[in-house]
Length: 287
Ligand code: NAD
Image (cartoon, rainbow, N blue to C red; front, side, top):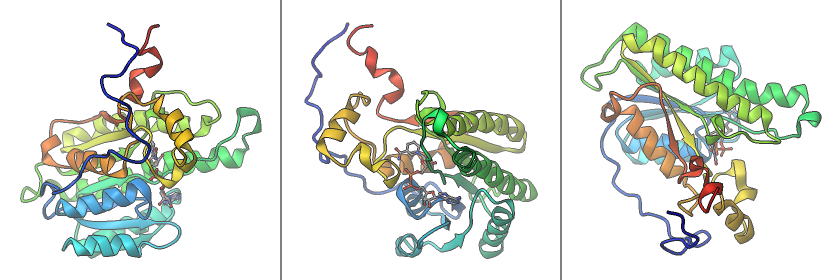
């Protein structure tokens, strides 16, 4: 059956959001590292991991991580800020080594750092292509590799988790939805999907789980112009069947779940957290 009117009114610009409270204690005693954790999704994930009981390594590359560290310490967990560019091998190696030295080990890697450098194909420079692939794809490869070394060295810490380690890759709906004018970004996210699945296959016999999250449109600095006026918001909602923008906390909730033993039989998937954006909303009224 098709219908031209929604069952309830579309949600208002900037209002009508769920109340999020009381994070379940799913990660007690674990150590998590979150990249790009001083902004947007990464910041919400880092704080949520702490609220769920983990000590957190807060990676950042620019600005300050002080506010995130303070929010984590307020939950009673420990935080360590580490400045590192995830596209640089020596910096990622040093970051994971510092995390292990400080907290003794690592249980969870959330490879979240990412950026956009948008251009039409014919205008896209090698610098724009290499920057996005370097941070979004190579950066996640390096973080996954260094985390896996520590998981393999240590094995299962049964007192905190039945898995030897968990890797969560921040992908996007653009791992499956093509995006004109963003070929570098969409290619990086498509690459993350196949990297994540290959790593999941390779590492599963060692009880290491690897999954991804595919956010839809989330209210962060990466896409401000897509939601910061009522007109832009209304236009965005034509792509979102659930008729609200996603909040960083929506992604943080999914990250905590995927990193926890609640998700112990989930391996090699992308969990889309997108209000139905991947449900081809253009076909909602016909086609
Ligand atoms: P954001 O711009 O708020 O945060 C990105 C973070 O990555 C920042 O902390 C930034 O400093 C960091 N970063 C960039 N380059 C880095 C580098 N070389 N080394 C270390 N850190 C680096 O954007 P966001 O929306 O929070 O994005 C986080 C992730 O979510 C990205 O991978 C992005 O592609 C993905 N994502 C976001 C959306 C969305 O709608 N916001 C949708 C799908 C996917």
